[in-house]
Length: 153
Image (cartoon, rainbow, N blue to C red):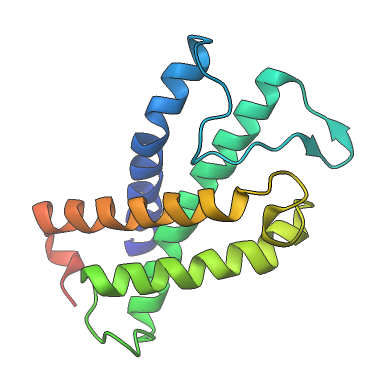
């Protein structure tokens, strides 16, 4: 149950972070906003303008859900070696940095975006770093506000 909740909260926070990009992209006022990695080629297929946004948004939401799952896995396995304090701000930042490394070094090359996402965008590594930092801060605030009993270690 913790994993489902974590993934859901991750998607919710990821959606909140992406909301300005969704509004501005759909109104056709601004293109290629930061925080969403622009995937221009997917598995050899050159994506059209609208498809670039949709794939970038789906990648962002999948990353957000995976971060929530990744964090709960770290808490459940007692892998918070440095902070040893589950659901604290520093532990969430620590896991966000580890997850950022995992995404940029392993996941991006596996899905064809290249090391650090450089095949698609030179700033993809920075966009994912900022997105995960903001997400971890918002997730921490959400947990502090609601503090449900199942978040207590």
